[in-house]
Amino acid sequence: MRSYWKAMGLMLGLTLCVGFLWGSITGSISGIVTDPTGAVVPGATVVALNSETGIQTSTQTDAAGFYSFPSLPTGHYEVQVKASGFREYRQTGLVLDVNSALRVDATLQVGELTQEVSVSATAAHVETSNTQMGEVIGTTNGPPQQNLWVDSGSGSRPNVW
Image 1 (cartoon, rainbow, N blue to C red):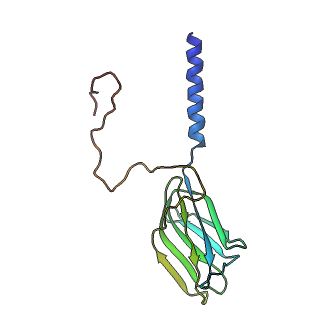
Image 2: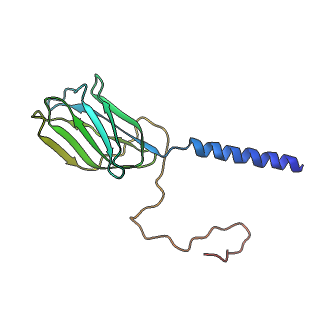
Image 3: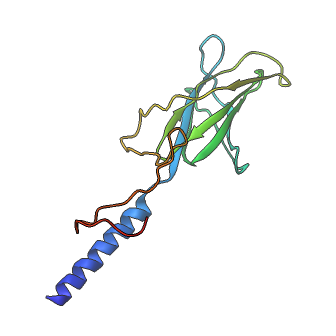
């Protein structure tokens, strides 16, 4: 009987470890790049810059003007879009949380390469392509939670706060 419980404990531990390793602490940013008439802009260079680490990830839009960064570490980002014959587009203040999918569509304005359009706004957190659910634990919007304790089922209150 003792070996049965050891085996069950080992299986439970392995299951928890595998689940933890498969967990994801990334999010994604995607969108469509268009010109002022609404036509897509294929071949535009899109850069996602992590404002906290300075790490840049770049890609190009496909024939439909679509781009995607499917697995970026969580953090604060800036998206820059460049294409020949258009002004540079920049959107700052993007917050990528665990399992979030940001949609950042860019409309490029016709102009010289030296001109730049910057947009500082919050992108809508819309989950359209993923069924995973994630939740950010902790917030700075409410009062701090203090003196929390968990009932261990013994009916008595723990002595440590």
